[in-house]
Length: 154
View 1 (tube, rainbow, N blue to C red):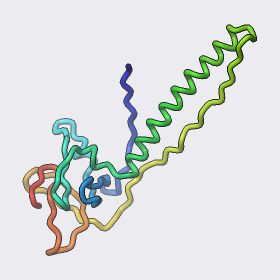
View 2 (view 1 turned 180 degrees about the horizontal axis):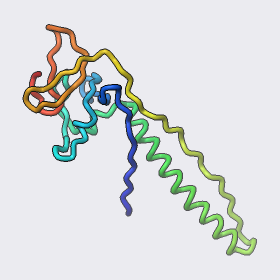
View 3 (view 1 turned 120 degrees about the vertical axis):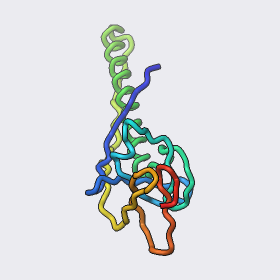
C-alpha cells in the first residue's frame, strides 16, 4: 500500500502566530509558526499554557484544522474512486461489445475552506528557559502561563 502525504498551509495572524486548542481544557492559544516548524529542533509534544498538561502536538489542532484535514482526505479518496471506476467503466464498455454496460457518475468533492488566523487581543509571552513565544489571554494576577514548548511557568 502506498503512503500519501497531503499538505496545506494555515495563514497565521499579522505577527505569524497560529491557533491551537488544548485537548484537556479546550482553551485556545497561539504559537509562532516558525518556532513550531523549526527543522533543527522538531517539536513533538506541546504543553497547554493554561492547564500545563502535555500531549502530542497533533492533539492540539483546532476543530477547524481537523475538519480541513478530514475534507482533504475525503477529497483525495473521492478522486481515487472516480479515477478507478471511470477507468473500469471505459474498459468494460469498450471490451464487452454491448453485452455488459457500466454507467458511472463521478462523486463530487467536498468544499475545503481556507484557514486564516485573525488578530486577537492576546498577550505575547517569551519563555526565559527555551526562548520560545506564546500568545495567550491573560488577566494580571489571575492567570498562570506555562510555556507550550518546555512546560515551565513563564
